[in-house]
Length: 447
Image: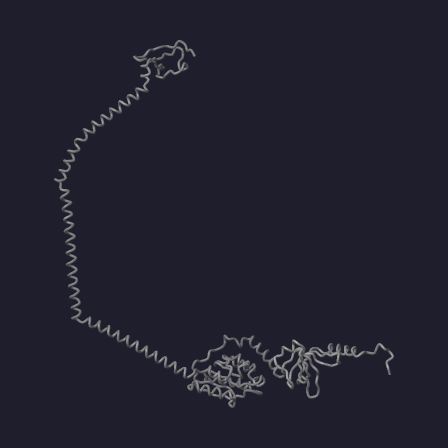
């Protein structure tokens, strides 16, 4: 029977929209684990699939670019762990899960746990390079902790026997996977380093999946390796496999065979090294022997030179040489003294008193004529200068002026009257003329 209210009738698109909104609002971001099926990747790059278990399945879609970021290749039947949002494709009414992340199930969870534990232990400094110890150069006894039935132990022992047979290797058997394997490996490691028998310890295991190697990602085992007083070499899995034991160990080898090569030197290299050292020792010994022989020869020569006869001959030679030098020195000294005496005799002869008196007499005779001639020259010069001065005085003398008809009027105190103002009435004045003086009295003054 149709409804009475036509407003309550929904179209398919309206119904699908309501259902999609209800799903997206009700379910948050969820994780789903299942097996991949109906896998397809069209040219658009999107990835379409179903996730199923034994009783049900759900459609899934992973759009580009998230589908290109996957770290593995999806394939049919692979068990995966996916994360996404539940929605409904309205065009077909298909209920589906839109994924934004997908990883392989099991291994993906283990990988997350591995990374979290690695980050935590690394933050504690458990993997710091400063705490790593160097391996002994020539280990005498090596502990190999591994499964006694695996290929890893055969590889390690064969390489050790081939490269360095002097090293003694002891296999300490432990399980390398399964429940309780990590605890037994850690306990064996503690017993090995506490025994004090071993120079180095090797943890070895062949390749496998992350689940197979999980025992070597145990936190207790990593701490035991880091705390070991004996250097530890980790050789677990293949070259691309990494475990926490690798990071905690002092040295990580990509394979068990490489670990054995790192532990011991190649015997052929050692033999070559020994031959080189032997040759160097032989050369050094020969060189030192030659040096000792040279020193002995020089000592023999010195001893031969120091015999009494040789010593006396050497002293005689030195005496003769000294006498020769002394004679030569006296001869040179005598020649210098003779030349000096000759010089002094010549000087004394030149300075003899009789010779000196004769020289002085000659000089005195030569000098005796000089004063009279000098006096005559001096008198003549003085007379000439005197006549010159007289002429000069006469030229400027007042008497010459008087002789020409002029007179000089003076006060009684000798002052010359140059102006009418210098004389007053009744002053008595002296008037000098050419042939004497006239005494006069001033009657009046006319300006």
